[in-house]
Length: 319
Image (tube, rainbow, N blue to C red):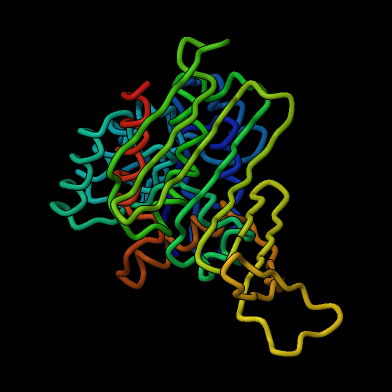
């Protein structure tokens, strides 16, 4: 088992603490939080060991799980990696692209591994169809959330949209060619609503919308590709796969047949992939343990987290 310590005991930090404590792949040593009152409260309530010195915790573990505000990700990761510790960093990887690039250098220099907490990669709905997404040419993503003060220290692009940016980059095998975007601040000092159009060199276009002041929650993405339409509901954990193939010469009474202007007939049919229930946060943490143990590349590497951040920052810059 890998000895692990958690930095940050806020809402998400407490979830990580609980799951790491339950995991068979980690030995939870304890946690650090700069808020001493909160640290002692969490320790008393849940029984985890509280360290009031960040360096003592880092020295005591093999893996540092960073669940602190974005602005402190870089300093926490740098301190950990320089001590030879593997790091799991909640998204976004850092606050600036330069900080993320520096972590890539530290990862190589100190021979450690890092993973970024883009949890939607482990969403069971996305896992059920990821292998069916081939060369998508148009993607539409909507991520809407009711207002919550947590996360408003960064623009909605870094808070919410970056989930979809990362998922899209993981299935589009092409470099970004151009980005056009707009963002509006309504409640926060940073944009609360944003829309971005990402054009890739291979011709794929992705249209992303994110809002943290909506009346209802929505997390849906739709992928359009040759002869297929794939819809992923990240919130409800449902998928819809609609495919087309050449129509049979003698279609059945219930076959759905379309004919285009050139007279070509296609048959529409549906696939229902199995969706396996999981705990996405536990899975991302445990696959990181596997990557360390097997000396393999993490599912969401620091480089991939850096690429998602770079696109997100380009979106913000184009407002």
